[in-house]
Length: 128
Image (cartoon, rainbow, N blue to C red; front, side, top):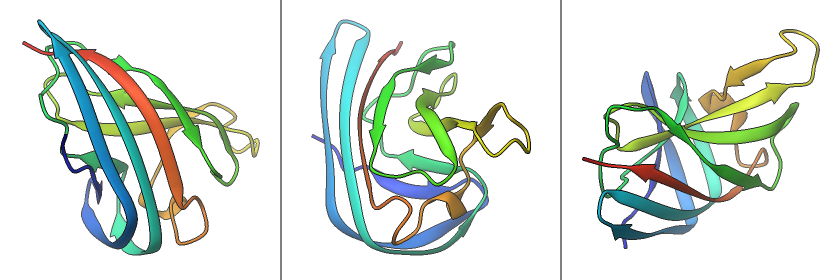
């Protein structure tokens, strides 16, 4: 097990967690993680929304997985991504507002006490 934590790429938010679960299986250099995070309060923070605390850093390749969010404002098709050599997850979402009408990195202000309060996902990635 491990403890996933919501962070921001520029400044970390203050969060009160209802659930903060991280589980993983590692076979050779292949790691599968399951993360469930639910907050009752979330304030502040800036930059890209991240989940830190993965048990192993990824290898030299950026990697993605599948995700289920309770609510994500105007974003749809949200996908977790792990950057090359990172032990954190960022999220890409498809912007449906027509402003960029493309893939954008979720910012910390996308997550709040109401939007969303729950993320559950798994991602499989390679480590060294």
